Amino acid sequence: MEQLYTGSCHCGAVKFEAKVDLAEAFTCNCSLCSKKNAVIARIPEDSFKLVEGEEHLGLYQWNTKRAKHYFCKNCGIYTFHRPRSAPEKYGINIACLDGVDARSLDVPTLDGAALSLES
Ligand SMILES: [Zn+2]
Image (cartoon, rainbow, N blue to C red; front, side, top):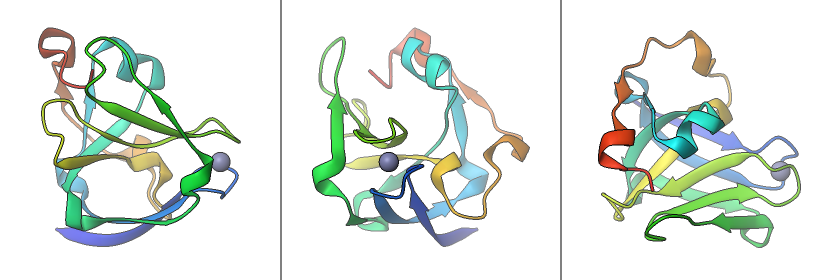
């Protein structure tokens, strides 16, 4: 079920709101997601709102440089990204959502290594 969550990076400079269905969360085995060990959910653009901290966002791009991976420049935490394969969506770092224990979720692994979906 979709629910509205507030989320933030570790230092709190970046704050956002996201409507997320935790049942749709997944991990990805591409080289970047593996290192981040991130649990991700993809949501439509209008389900995401950056509340604070646009000026603190750093952008990381690699490979085809089409995806946009954002992180807090102050604390280094990955907060959200725009997927290459679905640029109209936001990928959300579930671990950044308030009150959600991302590691307690039983999530499938997306074969991003084969598809390079998150690059
Ligand atoms: Zn931060």
